[in-house]
Length: 158
Image (cartoon, rainbow, N blue to C red):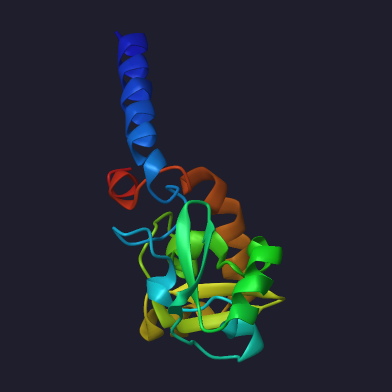
């Protein structure tokens, strides 16, 4: 009986993942139109040191999500090295990942730490995260591989 449950669960998961294969990868926080970071330019956090809305004129795709950029130069920097500029944990809340969850983020609640972009659910959550950034990053780095292949609704039931 247990083998049947495991097989059924694996089949259900495989169907869910294959249905999502035409959308942004499950480990990327994107809206229903596959837009990442709510349209904010990921490179601007590094080059302008502030959240900046991107433009539909300058786009790039990474892990099946669409990123917008405020300039052609930023788009080209991203295309050359997307992993360098894409937010950590697929753009999900860095603090939420420490709790085993994949929460949406407020693009204005951000920090670049050691050359990596981290986003938080909101500025109140960010205040908590800022109390122990190194510890939370270590914890999230350990937790992320376990949760990245699940939706937040699936994680909520664990």
